[in-house]
Length: 548
Image (cartoon, rainbow, N blue to C red; front, side):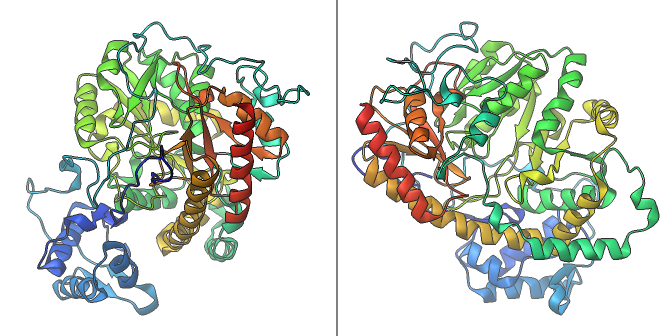
């Protein structure tokens, strides 16, 4: 989410449109023969299993808008597939895959074997005026082994959390963040809440959920009300496999999908499995999620930091740590928003082939606005990637539904860990979610969210340009948050504490660092109306000026 506003703002990343469906990028469309090209891509996806029999194709109007072509191009491509007998129109049921083309063994050349040579290129990209300070491993970066979990991100001139008035400190910012820091911040009252990663829960599709729940209950047998498969309901595992194939380029059999209570539980289940494999260290991105790091620490795992630059995590530094596993957010790095480039992806995959294990947290990849879709690393090297995702950012965290796709050698141990942890997720919500996924309801909800989030993202960028004109905005092309760094010599914990005292809640960037780095704020916008966003950012700007 980068937009040039003011003298030091980053330059905007120009729109590079595309569709999450099969990761179709508008920039790949040929000048002529668009319908034939699209029909070919669809045939390939049907043949290699990404579009299974029974899968619905997107509405022609929606796909045409995402690819920036006329509706006639999509209609013609669908017509050709219908003539071949691969799909058929079902009025309100849409266009559905009914048969797969025959492909001789050994001739498959689907998406999984194609690694994109570069990061998404569906539109012109204006380079950043300057990279996120402190995220590239410039000369002087502390070598591996010199970090400490207690290393401060910034130096404070007064007690962190003490407001300028000298009044009582704001509790979440008094000390180094502990295990309960997010609970404390969540419970702190605020008029404007910029907590990153918080979706707009008012948009939860209650009507669609109730409709799906009624349909599920009408068909549910008594046997389904007993103890279920600890791996998850077969219907949801199948629906997730289909969703990942269509939206993230990941080909997986339903038996490879383990349903979990969100990414947090996925990390918890991985603790004993990794230790049993002799892994007691998991490298992490820096800056990177404090919450994820806390979950790894809770399992007795150490987390050496690896700097992130404009292309993603530094693989040379990763190798130097000696860690055999790394936790990554490659599609939309948290909190910087960096997309791992094609060259860096190749370096990561080479590291993994040498014995490394990638834990891929695909936490909000569906939420993108100004760039084409980015395929998951799992789509490129399934045997060395543990893939984690959930509906927490798409529907609601309260559902506690996510998925974990592990390499074959870890799969049985993870199923055992899930079994002995809770015997499996609640079955009824799984079946309702499966119905939403299979019916297209979840994709319709995602389209609604994108329009809503884009307007709120734009409102926050405009407000930052007005009230923090010297700040640099990062990660604006996707996600539910953006990060702003500033040049003032004011610790970000002080800014966050003073802002909270004035009714605005946000997170300091230093919370998400282990290595030293410049100050900044991580600001979520998805759950806040545009008017409140403008008011909240005005408070942040005024607070920073008064503290400077």
